[in-house]
Length: 238
Image 1: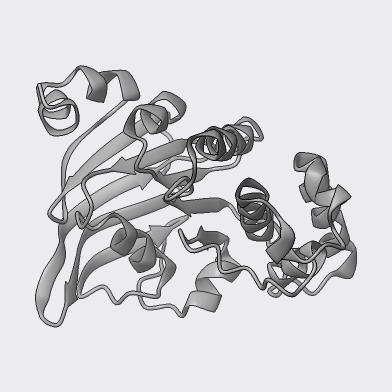
Image 2: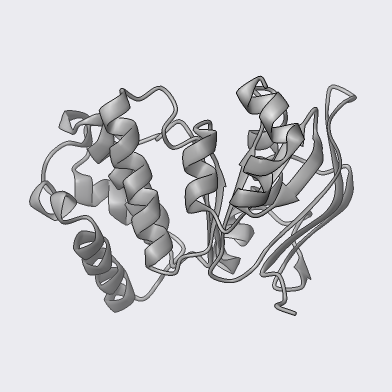
């Protein structure tokens, strides 16, 4: 059996004493794309922030390659190999594309490796190479997402966590952004994806988890979840 690269074991997260995540467990294997789906407020983003170390875990464990991380600072989590791309792209608009990308390499000290990673990002997203001297604020919505993804890749992540990458985008940009996620998957990058477009997320993911009021209520392959009565009731209304 493949050892999970990322494992969440029975975690609890509270806001102001109120439970937001309760006894939640999941695992991600190397090279997998795993999606987490659920209604707004179900705890999806809180889960990613807990893994990243920006949200305190009150109980349970989070393990990365067998090492507990739930008490580490966010910078330590990044150095270990987990990167989080939040739904707010958080780009520095006045800075050039390349300057924004280089900010993602702050944990690296090897200039040659940084340059190698930059070339990889430009190969993956040729449009960014064409616009590397442009201010990030002048890019289209889809291009700004490419910068956010590229910045995440600059630190050599072993797990890339994407939080609602298509949220709030026009339909044609949704397709563009989700195609970008598929490209990352084809590159063999391990991805933990939170995504509101349930059908598309299940189509591209190897496995999925359904979260409801802070608990995992179902898991399986995309086909298994789509065919389940729970999924049909919760997401299709039938």
